Length: 263
Ligand SMILES: [Zn+2]
Figure 1 (tube, rainbow, N blue to C red):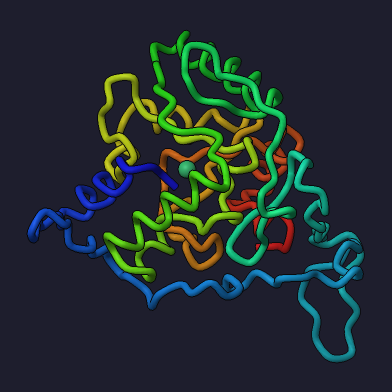
Figure 2: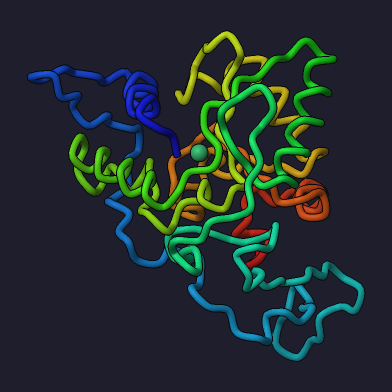
């Protein structure tokens, strides 16, 4: 979820940026689904039965047969209850609790942006490693307060209407940026900033390949809008800690929702 620039970025990416009296027309994204309302994201249960935390056997089951022991098994997990947990799951059906939560924050060195100390330290390590490969990032956004998100969402709604605003921006109290664990990254050159075209940059490719090693995940991958509730954002990375990021990589899980509720 971006800032003012995201409006421009998304519009440019969609190649539809018609200035009508100074107000850009809503960008038409390809394959636009019906509006994602404030309701639960499809496929993501709002609450999970306790039994889901058990290890379940996944495999072919037919009448009169028992699933093969030791066949494919997967652990269905449960998202942490505390908003302070590094693995916290925040989406359209799981708001922050409390809605006005403010995490402990530290300034990311060399920028005016803030993150939780764990995420800031991990970002520094990741940026240093990228630097060795000749890759330099620009932090475009990191922590955003409830008040700031409220402002942004109102701005998007005025410009594009609620349906489109809900695809590209979180409502206040439902933004991952408010956890202090999410950041929007761009290339130091500014190329493709907060736009779909960022995906084609060396910086985005480096992140897609290496971010998990530092505890970050691409939070809104391509083709997962029905699960995450948001359009593809090649720039939005979320710190979840290495345990989760590496498990997701190993199990080829693309979203945090899939990590907790199964693919
Ligand atoms: Zn973002």
